[in-house]
Image 1 (tube, rainbow, N blue to C red):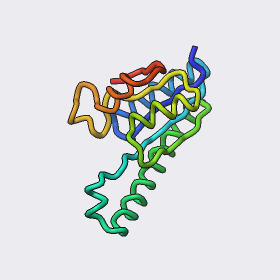
Image 2: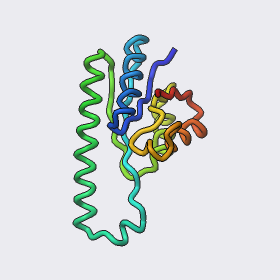
Image 3: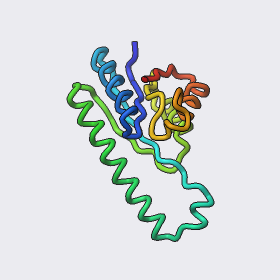
Image 4: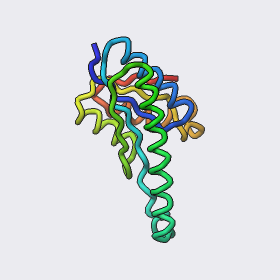
Length: 144
């Protein structure tokens, strides 16, 4: 049914549930996966007030965090015996990047958690997940 599953994660506990579910689904049907993590665009006000060292420190810290998140996701994919690729998309609004990249890569299913790190703002359905659901032409599986 599905040949290429696109799994979004931010490394949170809830996102890990989505990752695990997507990997188990892929393993059961022999699909390949692309595991993606997106880092947000800096707000213009934050950039205006931040000095170059602060921006560089932030980008370095985020890069390291994403590297660890995607490395762990890759280990999980290997443990499930799933063919995978990992991808970091920096400086993008997450929902836009997820929908656009999934389409560009020819994914036929997007898997994501109902909410991630920003989950306390919208406990029932995260704003990024809601945006993906309303804009994607690719089926979306939301894991709670």
